[in-house]
Image 1: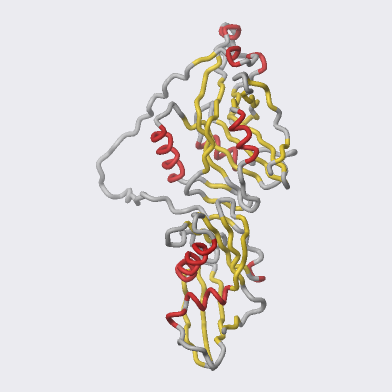
Image 2: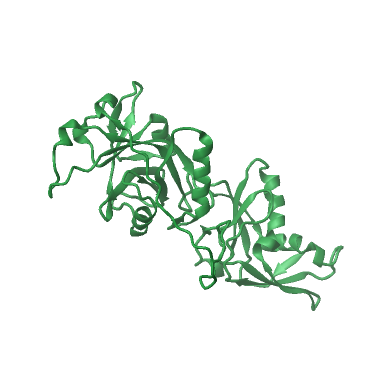
Length: 363
């Protein structure tokens, strides 16, 4: 038997799957007793255990060790100060990393709940922690090293590798009127369009990932002889065909942010190489957990896109989630900002039709 000597009993909320659906809660004290069993006296205690907890705000974004991926969704609390006493005698008085203290017990709990699920999340919940938002912390990047710039090293140079030419296509062959195309136009199969509207997404944390496919340059003889406002040749227009949507690995997320890491890009590049297909990184997507009728990409999103996705045809997909509805839009660079792209969806005959960025039922 144990008691927690604080105002309001603390609980541990448990979330399941990459979308972090809440599946239940347990008292923190019961998990603590199991985690500290080796340090507590055996047998039925004559006196109750008194437990004092101190929540230490020392962020720890690392995952719980074990066969399943378990995220601490309130990783701002990275350590717990624990004092356990019984009958006036102090049995334990030390500070523990949360992931080391609760990790082994949670690995056992989730194994019993669903042995086939590999991704879980948890957070410590207590009235004193209500102001701390939930989030999946950005993991530490693997394979990094520190450089001492004062140390003499062999010099090296970096040169840009030339991009292969973008193949051209006559839009009329796809059933598309070239006159209605913008600088960048997104092409989606019915399956991919449906997947983006129906894929399971978290309502608590922003999610995101990568868009894979191929790019085509619009062949338009009618514009070839035209010049821009200052006499320059007209800019190329592109058709961006998206044929795979893959969630990002090693990413961080919260209710109002989504973060890639270098490992996220390493994983997706390995995926592209392993596929053995003519496939490129067409851009990225992420969610906003509110209606998008009056807003688009945030300034942080725009900076991320312009600074990370350098090709003029790479796009940023945005999925706004509001209740059971979602709004799907794409953006591409336009000068030092971005502009919304048109979406065309392939029909059963292999021809494309213009799709509106309307709110769709995401259930």
